[in-house]
Structure formats: structure tokens, C-alpha cells
Length: 200
Image (cartoon, rainbow, N blue to C red; front, side, top):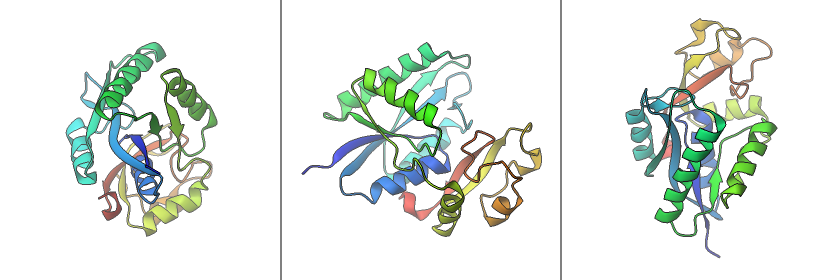
């Protein structure tokens, strides 16, 4: 049986990279490309703020093409949905039979449901290979397996600014205050993937 072709949402962060790693361990799927949303005014990934040239360098290291869904800095849901629909149509035209998109979501059920609904409306299926993971154990496993990342931004209402730029390592996890998710799934911080042989 042929493997299901998958387009992976790529933020430039550790969860997207780990989702790629997890998908590459499976025989039933084949990741054919990466998709990122880019804020056009800044030429950066929409959430993490990682520069587009860095995203393309990451994609090249992973050996995959990167598709961009361009959105404005002030973006409502309808505009975002339109950009994603166009990007999915571009991907489907490039890879015939492609109708599955994967995301590195960990436990936010409302976001997962939103993605599932929007993808279904476009005739696509959602795959979330990391969903439901124990984030404390997952963070330690990522580190043990060689993932290298740094905090690229923090919500200073939730976490001290001194954490920005910190390596994603055991010392960071040990220093996080109670209530801050070890994988940052609560949106209090974002991590930039800086290395890891498993991506290749």
C-alpha cells in the first residue's frame, strides 16, 4: 500500500521539527513538503517571528520544499482561511493525491478542532502525530534525542524576559515557573529550532 502524502505545517519551532521526526519514523506516511504562514510586512513566520530566509534554510536542511501562505500583519480569520486555502490548492496541484496536512499541536483541543474543520471544508484531513503527548516527558525526550532550540520570544506577562534567547535544555526546564508548559504549548513562549541531526 502506498504511503499517504503529507504536507507539514512548519513554524520553524521545535514542535514542527519533532512532528517531522515522528512522521519520518512511520511507513504509512510520506512528508512531501512544508507549509508556513508568513506575515508579509515583516517577512517572518507569523507566530514565532522567524525570518523567511531562516525557514528556507531549515527546509533545505530537512530536504523538503517550503510553501508560503502570505498573510497581512492585521489578519482576521477569513483572511487567514483564504491564504491557507490558496496554499493548500497550490500544494494539491504540485503533489497529486495530497489531501493530508499535519500539525505539531500537542494538547490545545480547540485549535485542533478549528484546524480539522477548516481543512475538511477544503477537502483535506488533519494529522496531529504529537497530540496528547505528556509535554514534560516530551520536552526531556526532545533534548535527549539531540534537538537544539532557543527561546525566540516570551510573553512577559507570564514569563520573565530573561528567558528569551535561552537554550532549550534541562536548565531551562528546571527554571520554568509552575504553570508554564514545558513545551510552551500555552503560548507563553516560542522556540526556534537551531539544530538536530534527526531533521535531516
